[in-house]
Image (cartoon, rainbow, N blue to C red; front, side, top):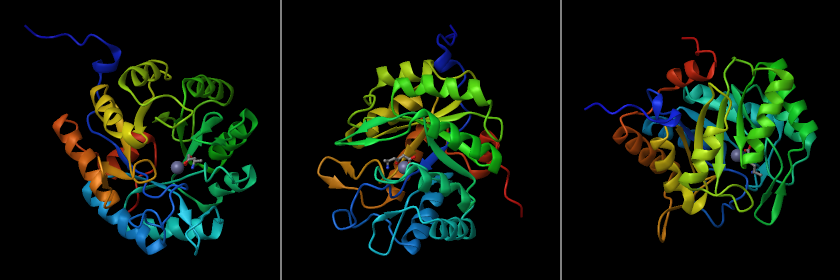
Length: 289
Ligand code: KMH
Ligand code: ZN
């Protein structure tokens, strides 16, 4: 007897798995997490290792000379160039920055010329802080991505953010590249929980035709990864989201998180995509040469 696909989640699994690495983030301190890549050299080395391990996208936050988060546009531009020189990864700059960054600085990130950027679809409690993404800011950022030809990835920390994404697309149309790709960021204290039931609900609410990846923060990393693979989604991993590899064992490198994700994707018979395959799916121009 042949089983029929019974749900829209399982009906059309993607042919491969897009793996994004988020190596640094804005929250962890280098003094507490020595393996965190914070200099340009460390970031480039990490990017090469993660590409080798199966990543196709790098989600970038940078640090200043004191390892503090910065959105300095000159440094971001140098970072984009250095990553392009060293790898063929899709370079996605964070427009979320740190919770202390102003809207003006976050909008200016697009001036660094990335392939892609994050665009969070609403405000969310973020541990003891608040990550601010009011509607007018979302709109301004989205329109700038369209004008500058940067492909946004819609970051969804909560089910209400999915509704805001529908509203954004209804008002301004499709993103540059013509394809909607989302990342469910799950398990943030204040956002949606990182479990399979919530993931299924969020995926069911996404716009038709959208692709999606999922990220489970902290101890939700593995349950979210398994649920995402089971539901036909893509993966984001990295030390921005997870600094513990297993109980009591700190993450040694971003590459080991990517390697674990790639192994699970392989077991799910949807191996890691190459950057060119990911570019094709996301509507990002293939690199010349
Ligand atoms: N650092 C968080 C406040 C993003 O990169 O777009 C926001 C964040 C999301 O990491
Ligand atoms: Zn980020």
